[in-house]
Amino acid sequence: MKIFVPPIKSQGIKTKLVEWINSSVKDIRFDRWVEPFMGTGVVAFNVRPPKALLCDSNPHLITFYKAIQNKEITPSKVKDHLTSEGRLLLKSGGQYYYEVRERFNNQGCPLDFLFLSRSCFNGMMRFNSKGGFNVPFCRKPDRFAPALITKITNQVGYISQIIDSGNYEFRNQDFKNTLKEIGSSDFVYSDPPYIGRHVDYFDSWSEEEEIILNQNLVNSNVNFIISTWLSNKYRVNDYVFSIWSDCFISTKEHFYHVGGKEINRNAVYEALLSNIKLESSISNKEMKSRITKNESLLTTKQKTYEIHSQLSLAMDDGSLS
Image (cartoon, rainbow, N blue to C red; front, side, top):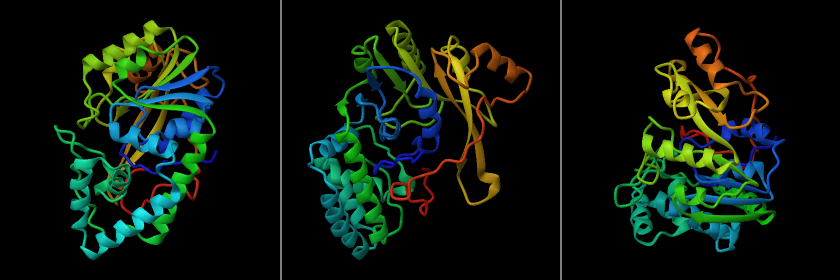
């Protein structure tokens, strides 16, 4: 499977989990794919459903993809923008980044959003309490070399083709409003902020919201999958066994690199929770028993994921793809 990576970067993007998610839903029949937490769109753009409702509380993500859909953003415009802005960035020794950031926070230009996403520290997407993008510069004034500009331009082109091939609606709204609109023939893929982990302004998340998400999905009578984490070397996500106790669980081991040394290669068991039995899923009760008995938590086989050469995220800045 060729994995198509969107041009917008974000920590926690599901690039390395997309094939697993896609294989888990390939036999499920539905009329419309719904995501209350679209994020970068990497899952929907790889599943490529014929019809989709893609929502997020972050207005800049929705504005960016609507601009691609409406042809306000094209590969040629991206190339011109990043080339000219990249020159100014290099000439300023990196200080121009903060001019663009201030301009974006005042005007909200989607091309500036792309520029910041690809030149900020560690590919983070973080906003202050007033909604202002506040991630610092990545300290690489030569960030926008021709090869990277070509890669990003191609990413925009491929995503544009995917959007054009389907009936996609992008909407900026809270997840609760999205869940009010789902029908019995929809399929919901939900990727909320991981509860118990760091969050930003647009993605603040609480136990109360996790409960609301569960109740709305269960009461809707639709088939659904939710992405979350099961455990790491420090602790177990107890919400999986309380709020989501009626769900099946499928797991995959995923490694996050937080430094150049092997000791900093931290494993996390990612989980797909579903109200339907998936090929590799087990019951909530069985998973809890495995944890108690200190048995393997894996329900899937390890795979090597192939990332499309034109669409892979640049790895030279230490960010997660």
